[in-house]
Amino acid sequence: MSEAKEYGYFSGLFHGIKTLLTGMRVTFKEFFTKKVTEEYPENRAVLKMFDRFRGTLVMPHDEEGNNKCIACGLCQMACPNGTIRIESEMVEDPETGKKKRRLVRYHYDLGSCMFCQLCVNACPHDAIRFSTEFEHAVFEREKLQEILNITKE
Image (cartoon, rainbow, N blue to C red; front, side, top):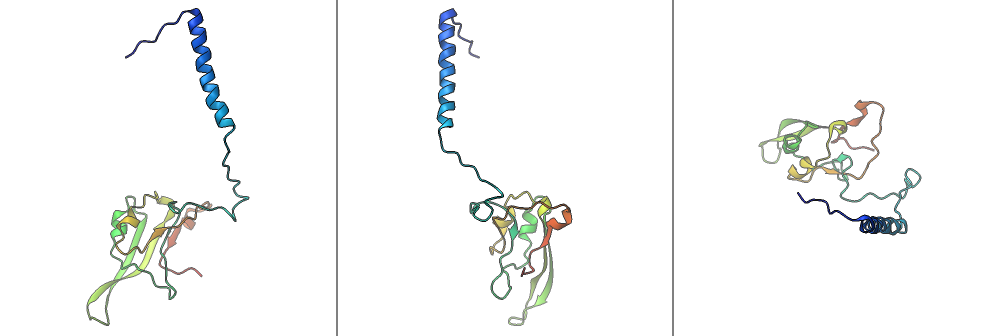
């Protein structure tokens, strides 16, 4: 460990003034830089979140209301705290005659989600992603539980 340098009376005084001026230089430099303050919620209509922001987990649907989820369960296994629960059933494919898994319900609990994105990374078909929606304040925790495979009108 290094020992503190001992100063005489005047050299200590000048050293103190020098360190004070160094700190004041940083303060004045920051004082004159342009500030970036979001006036939320007044600017709610023009507020733009970054694309990498992790808001709510969503399951995109096409024009017919179909999604890409094949109910493989990889997102459910990747979730560290059980936020995702998948209900599926086995149905027979009319084209091939083979049995395949079909998604019945995709439960998502926003209240216990850590927004770690492990579920999105684990999905082989890009069936889920995070949106940039960030307003999640509710009074009842039940409102934070969603079923994602139902199209919202």
